[in-house]
Image (cartoon, rainbow, N blue to C red; front, side, top):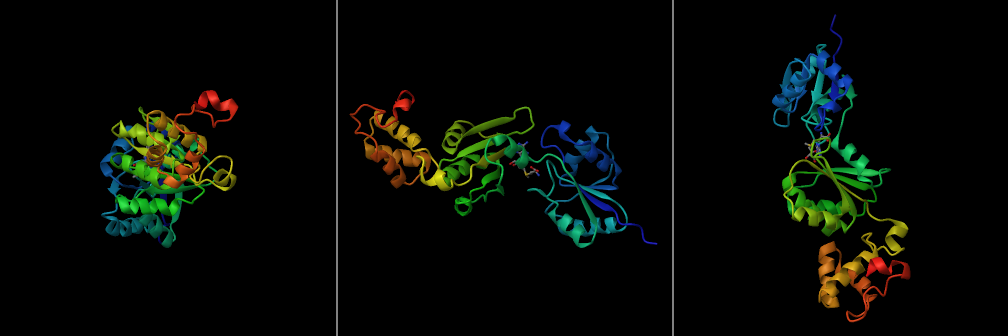
Length: 306
Ligand code: SAM
């Protein structure tokens, strides 16, 4: 009689802090016949830490075509297999999709044993809307394609979640500011690790911050969705969701520093990645540079605004 089929377990592993491994993942990793891992050296270190000696084979984009049929054969022969990646949930911007697909096609039971994932961790702490969000993964490396991708999500009202490599962080932030406008955003860096850091700011602030620091570590960028309804059309917000007052504050700062209105509009449009027309509209409400600053602000706001 043929042996019962094995099961494929898709196991989440820590994204930095080893305490985040679950008891269930540890049990499954001990009990299966084989672990398919993105990087066997990396996974062996994790296993050694927890005293697990289950055999490990590699499964990554370069050997998937040969490896997947071998693993499926073992599953069909009755062995259970765990799939892990270097960090977080396998398949989420990591290898494993081909194995899961093949297992589903072969009628093998696929069980997900959940663990940490950077996208949900960052989203949960960003302080931005979470009712609806879009996971965008890594943006294209090439500048033209990256901007085109951002153009394609520009009108999306959902919170956007991106993964980014440190050496592309500055370019990604600059393009986000230029294409999406100066939205509220959050950078979640080195989550669950010793140097974990959260930066909640507008994109212009994040661009400035990272112009002065060398990006190192792992990053998730969470960006507010496109402004909608009243947020977009009324209540002092412009088409990029920016408060008109913020634009005027920046214009005033440039004019106090000696710029004329035209030069200030140019500078602020560049800083915020906004069309000059939008900034010009806000500038119309400003008095001439010689007048006392802050006179266009409502009385209650004058102290802060000037
Ligand atoms: N499978 C993983 C998951 O579930 O999150 C993602 C793997 S993907 C190859 C690696 C990217 O995930 C990093 O470049 C970074 O954008 C994000 N990431 C992973 N771990 C992170 C951490 N501890 N802090 C911040 N971002 C992290």
